[in-house]
Image 1 (cartoon, one colour):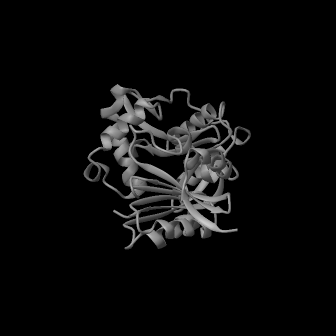
Image 2: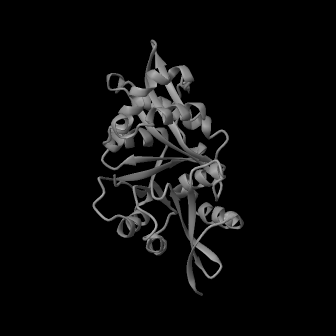
Image 3: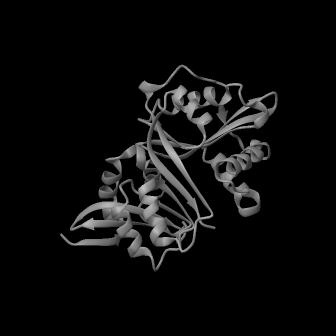
Length: 278
């Protein structure tokens, strides 16, 4: 059968969802993008596209391209099929950031990155279902509110600095607006103690297949007090009351966070990679 690479259109939505759903834990980020934004942008949204590799009429791999390469997310796999898509996009996509399973991201970097990425981190994907959860809870964890924004900003900046080695305020003039948007979308949870926000966590992606957590951060003066363990347990228990699974990417060098995840009940899975080119 002939192999082709095509931009996906609305009639391909079911095929894309079926492809991603076969390996839902490793595709949760893409599944969330698909469910939230659709396979093609509305006129009011910034440009993005899903591209697919077809064997005849069968969709075998897919790549999300946002902002002409501002964010590129491949479907899971050994990278071979992703490489075919990346080669086809080499003339039109300039890779700025990518996240996904490591072999697939490696293929994107080979074809779409002209120089060495400024930042490259490998992560272990951890996943959990309701049956795996331990007894860790903190019912005072709550949704962030609009009035929390100014107090939340140092935590959001700190999380980016620790997780990605980036100065978010210096590099992203829209960073505060992005934090505010997550609050309005009810995707940020915080723990407040004695009038101070001491912990935060974000829901990075959500769909009927599950959700991916990101941006877990405890202020340095409040660490080693169990906040991360109890709050991760709390939000996991809450979300798993209506979703089948949760995932969390943890830097492979961050043994402390890996221990917390395992304690709560998360199980280590495959290796993922995040790259920032600019």
